[in-house]
Length: 213
Image (cartoon, rainbow, N blue to C red; front, side, top):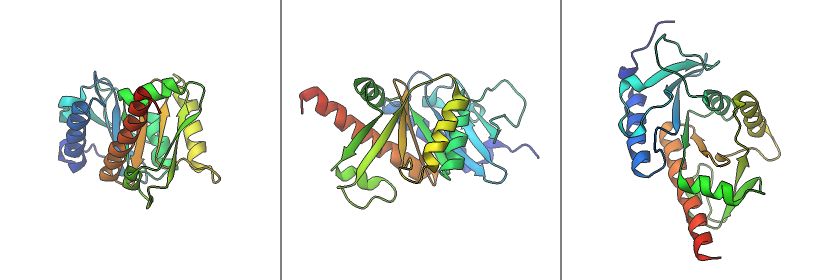
């Protein structure tokens, strides 16, 4: 398979813009976070931010292409994120076209406050209608909280099982405890909208806690 000139991909410029926006929003500080977009489905190929890159100023040299095993297609000094297999699990299990992972104060804080819970329930807010498939503010969104782990392979298997669960399928997002938020969408634009909506809802929940319920 020939090596693709990543700078020629329109998705790269879109991810650069997302990095700048998310940094400004305090969702991707201090080289945290990772983003991916599906370039090809069969075989699966993802354009991803490389590990340890400053999201406020991403260059074409801060991205790499990975295959469905999470291995970079081109030799070089860039390393895939340690969480690459989570992106692959979501791309496969949810049929996602893009996966965005943020490290906001709000998702981290709420996952810590809810240390005895396995998720956060959000209902009754108009912003829920920004999520794909949601048509009413009365919708109830369940955001699971998964325990953070360095065993990414097992964590990816857990996420895949949740995505394929027919009774309570994982729909729009989950949080790694004291770590950050994972969201996705059929397209990069949809994934970005989901991040903005879920981060808004988490901030509302957290601020409400700070002033009392």
